[in-house]
Length: 195
Image 1 (cartoon, helix red, strand yellow):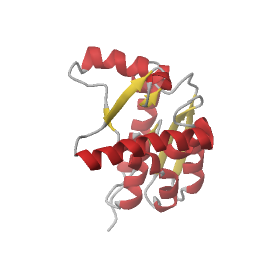
Image 2 (cartoon, helix red, strand yellow):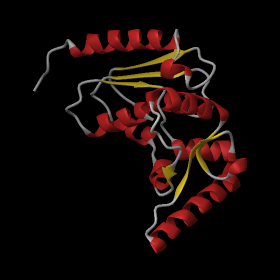
Image 3 (cartoon, helix red, strand yellow):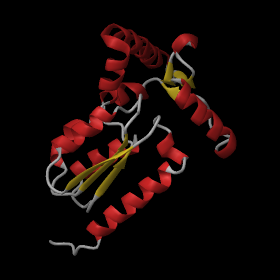
Image 4 (cartoon, one colour):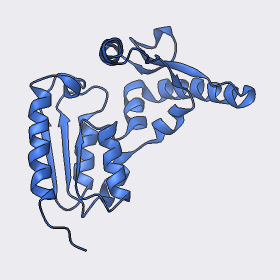
């Protein structure tokens, strides 16, 4: 998600001199809608909204699982084997106090996030979008749309991937992308700041 949020932040804060987005989430509601279909997504959101209503009525925070293999066991923030394998592994090795839960009310804002709408506002801030060619959860189509909608100094770089999480912590992907980002930022940030 950070790659998408970087685009939105740069669109609104002109103190940012350059922005690099790697594997960004740009249209979360659109992605879920396309993946689940209108009826499936509407049903999913109905369940979320019922939990939020319960929280407002009782004052007790309502949670759903952050990760799950799928939706067969109930609601989950990231209901897919790819996310489950990554976050389950890294929570045990790197964040043993992490809890597999997320507040249901946070999903209402999450599903309305759309960084594609912010893309035309980025210029004149230089923009680098790096995205995997295969990503079932943060779709390459939305990365392409961000690039197309942005003006000014921009670059779109595709990385041949097999899934989304390869860009998180797996080589050669991370080393390749980090090298590209450093080179691109270095070229832009070495330019003098104009008033």
